[in-house]
Length: 126
Image (cartoon, rainbow, N blue to C red; front, side):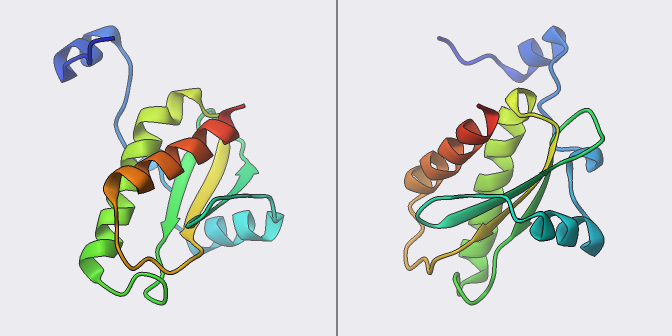
């Protein structure tokens, strides 16, 4: 399969953006997802999720300094999680999702992290 250009995707009418309505922003939104206590786990990530009333999935990301010391690496992990969500959002059920780090990361291998988070989103989509 060939990767479509941004112009082809826009012409097809598929929204792969990461707009405001796809984000969790308020403390209460994060708290309600954590309180629901449903989670998928992988080696480095916990993906908490809760159904919502909107027609699409929404994402929140929590990357603690305790597990990823470098700000550059924390931002890298955030970008990887957001990019994976952005590309898989159309396949996800309408849920509020909070992804957080659950284990210390010494090195940030982009491909391994991306594969790990993609696998979590795929499990949630089932």
